[in-house]
Image (cartoon, rainbow, N blue to C red; front, side, top):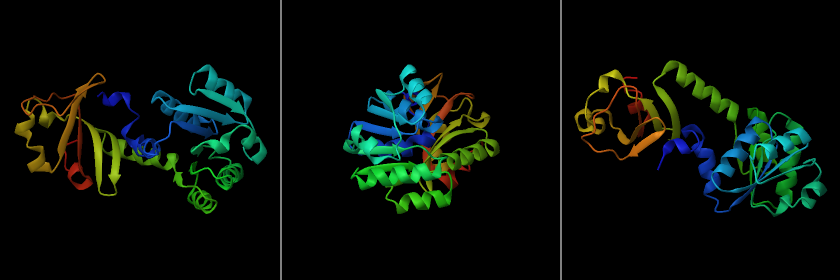
Length: 238
């Protein structure tokens, strides 16, 4: 397993929820930066993805860059257009419009009223998110907020490269091995007894060793992935 081949840790919660749905086909409505990223990642994971946007240039870009299996131009605020394109037959639809609140809400309402089982919608504000929930969105995401939190963490703790929150109190984090750990074996560090953390992987140059040997010596500049409580993670010398 190569952790670098997966989406960033901070995005894994979003894609884990999608992968847990059991289907292999997704429709992504809205092909801005967020929508294209969703298409590209799901397509790279082996799922069949249909991209949709009212902008012909964005549709052409997705197809040219091979970000999805299919992409079509249509107005998602028109229920008949969605029906004719077969969108209502998908088990999961991701409404990635975001910045156009009215179109986002109408599109979400259209696909839910048509009986799509699971709808994920991007929100640009708390109020927008509440409205999306009101019209039936099963999951609402706030990518700008999550990016802001990630930026703040990277500025205050530069050694912490990435984080995936398991719940409000526990996370999996990817961190640069600090100078204090350089040359020490994993068993010498006593991460579990001293910090309450479990080491999952160690790597460099996009190659990771999962469950590394306790006698492996750590090297400053490499990366390690650990899991534990946020309080314990904050005690690492980063």
